[in-house]
Length: 287
Ligand code: ADP
Ligand code: MG
Picture 1: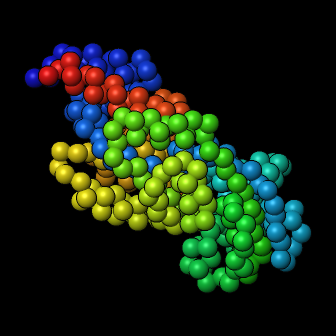
Picture 2 (picture 1 turned 135 degrees about the horizontal axis):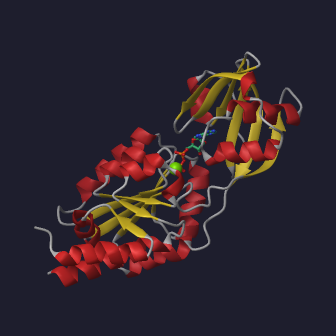
């Protein structure tokens, strides 16, 4: 039978905006030693600003229109920022054959013309020759009718408490913090450095993130637990694979709520250390 104080623990946690799906997760969370983060939407705001449209073959406005239309049904924060930068109403009937390739981008037909918007992996996959660029933001390459049309540079910001959140975890005795991301190495390394996260793996597809977590699971003892914190976009499989999957600010994402063991009601990454502290306190009361 489940000790009554577990229910008190779950109830108390929920008061703090930490929803725990079962008492067993409180126990696992209390033993967390490794915390692995997703980047976009977890440690960063996931609100991108378009900082430049670099066009090779067509006017900027048109490049942005192709990208925004092709992305019209994606829920990725990159898509949302492109819609916003485009600023005009999207006529969805102009867009057909939409396909989202997680960790890469999207392909679709706009007015019957094939359009692709995404990262270098997507361009390679489609055999489109693209130009590398030296800028530090996330880059959305755009191909129209099979030819490279240019790229859109967008940048994301750290969440206000992200750095403190990492510090709190170290203070709480977390021995390893790791960041995983599908974004470019250059962007990932910069963010990890700013946050004080020593280990970072970039340019990962959702399946690569799972493989990386499996590697990390091997490194620690059975008693020590690994928590993965993500937002459910392109990381639901990892949320399920970790010892404890924590979804943050996930109230908008069904995939995250489904895959996670613990759901943090708000976007504040400081809630991660708080959740671990609550779980430990609860275990001390139970035993
Ligand atoms: P993270 O691991 O940081 O949360 P994702 O796995 O969601 O990032 O995405 C990884 C990369 O894949 C993004 O940085 C972007 O380059 C590309 N990408 C994913 N979805 C899209 C999209 N809808 N449009 C354009 N690019 C995308
Ligand atoms: Mg993500």
